[in-house]
Amino acid sequence: MDDMTTTQANPETTKGVIPYLDMGGRALEAAKFYEKAFGAKMIGHVPGQSAGRVAHCQIEINGGTLMMTDHADNVPPRDNMHLQIVAADAQERWDRAVKAGCEIVMPFEMQFWGDRWGMVRDPFGVQWAFNEATS
Figure 1 (cartoon, rainbow, N blue to C red):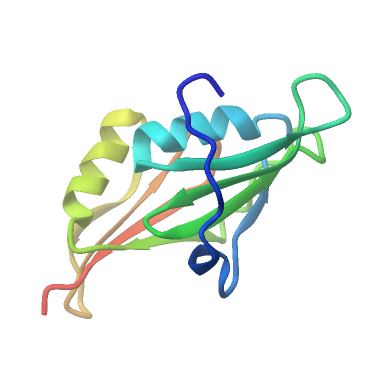
Figure 2: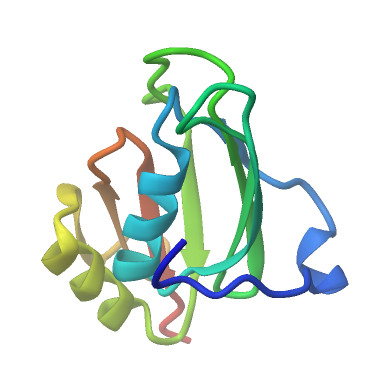
């Protein structure tokens, strides 16, 4: 991708459960948006068999990995899932995502459990939550 750097995957970012999304033909577009909105770094991608499609795409966000593909057509991610970023600078990350074009689902504010938390939906239908511990 023209404005994203391809790097070696950090073994520490591939531990645990890795979210893997089928972006229905928009994986590289999503990776570019995630760079702008969430500070993502492109790890790499493998072109699909059809022009403009991606067989596999891996990005790193906040020290973790997100993988995407374009296997199916027009398959939006389900609304009953979200990706969560836990960070000391969650307010800054929230502001950046909203400025980039994310729709607010739940305002970023103090929650009953004692943290500041909020949720947005990106232009690809993926919900992102931001959590900032206050203690």
